[in-house]
Image (cartoon, rainbow, N blue to C red; front, side):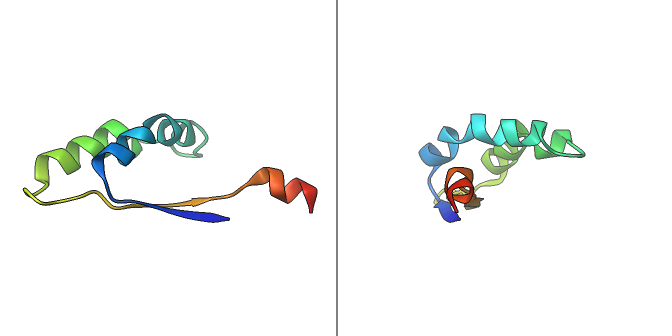
Length: 67
């Protein structure tokens, strides 16, 4: 398992598609989980020197199948 820390707006925008695909796999998806909702909230309330903070735990299934 890898842990990725995203603390930059450019990096955050790069994970939008992955974020949205995870929501489609959720048992109870909600509008509040969407990338657009989260990004809009962060954009509206961030300060001048604010940065996003997203911590991702990524499981590598290909390594798991080899074990």
